Length: 133
Ligand SMILES: [Zn+2]
Image (tube, rainbow, N blue to C red):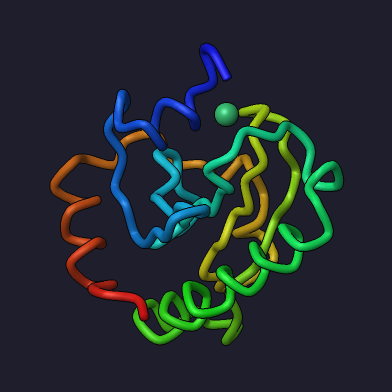
């Protein structure tokens, strides 16, 4: 898809902090995280709306989200004991699942978006997460 920022991230035309990927899905950091470790998981194939994905893709993307969420929980130890998931799709029109280590429900609020995270911060967070199997 032309001019889709996430398609450009997939093609490495725009840099991102890649957390995990396979042939069909990619996880990378939100550049405006609500909490440290806030990750976006996307299908590499462009689709605007989550519920327009094929049934198998809906199942696959959730299955891919699971080990990422597990790792985020282990590493960031959110106070709620949970990694929250948001599927909104209002900002970028390419399906993306937000995975957010949640101290409380407030961490799901887009008003919590932090705009001043440095490259060094992201690199350090990437180091903490390490490899996801
Ligand atoms: Zn796209």
